[in-house]
Amino acid sequence: MLLDPKASNRLLQSASLCFDQSVDPEAMERAARRLVARHEGLRVRFDIEAQRQQVMTEGRVEFELVDLSGIGPERHAAMQAEQIAARQETDFDLAGGEVLRLVLIGYGDSRWELLM
Image (cartoon, rainbow, N blue to C red; front, side):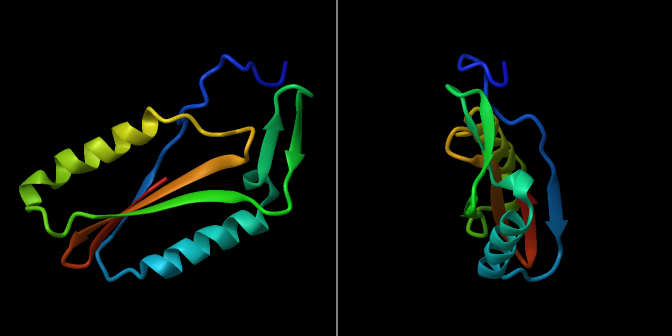
């Protein structure tokens, strides 16, 4: 069986990249969309009933911008942990082709983190 309908589709792997320079969130989102367009493994959807994979012409990427610049630095670690926990508890829509989820967190003072 390719995919059990009762199986969890939650986050299995994660990583983060930290940037200590200015980041253009719109350019980051465009780059993510180009990455998905280029790699068919990121455009796969899973047909549970037919038990097969299908490579879509256009893929999906969830890109979210979280601005923590107005929150004191002493709260950044707690807020980051909340962002990570929220994503880990949310299933991916594998039947709809969602296999990549990105969150760009802005901490202010040209500090950014990309959660993948």
